[in-house]
Every structure is written in structure tokens, then in C-alpha cells.
Amino acid sequence: MAKKIDYEDLIIDLYLFWRLERKGGRVTTAKLIYLLEDELFDKNMIGPRYKMFKHDMGPYNLNIGKHLTDLSRSGFLSYNVHYFEKRKKDVKTYYSNKKTEQFIENIDELIQ
Image (cartoon, rainbow, N blue to C red; front, side):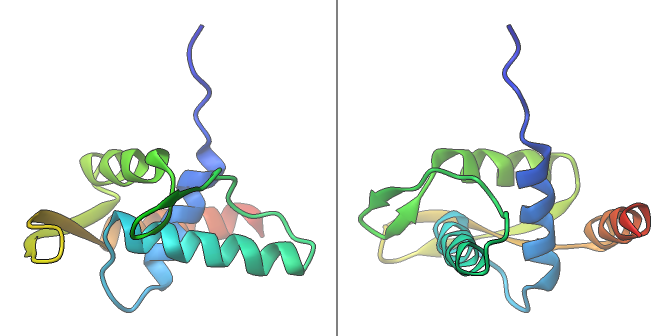
């Protein structure tokens, strides 16, 4: 049986990057999603549904990294690679691009 794809979470991830004014890596994105989920919960609204676990750098879910990789491979997110001193390794920082913007505009038109 094929695993269900959570398209809603992918779309929310794209919205998040479309609204961000800075680039974000996997852990930064997880922290922002965690805060977004918390804020939406307080407002009795539905948001992303990542089950977070405690990571030494903050809340995290492995699917977030997979989703960012899939979205960048599909061209919906761009990324840069740079060396992260604290982790002693190269990391990717993701950001929105024209394809992100076009997709979000199409979704907004569909919703309205």
C-alpha cells in the first residue's frame, strides 16, 4: 500500500517560505512550523500536522527535511549550501522562488 502524501503540509511549507524574509534550514523551518502550529491551536484553527520530537537544536520531525528536499527537487524551493560551524558540516538553507510564488497564487485563486 502506498503511503499517503500530506499535500496540506507541503502547501503550508510553501506558504511559510513564501512569507519568510530570510532563508531557513531544516531545523529553523521545524521551529517556525512548531510556533505556527502552537499559534493556530490557540486560535482553534487547523495547521500543519507534524508530530514533533525533542531534538538537541529544538523541535523536529524527519518529514520536514524530506518535504524540503522533495520541494527543492521539484523546483518549488531553491537552496544554498553553506558550512554550519556549530554542527561542523555543510547545510542547505531553503528559500522561495518564482515557482513558489506562482503555485501560491494558483492556490489562492482556487480557494477564492
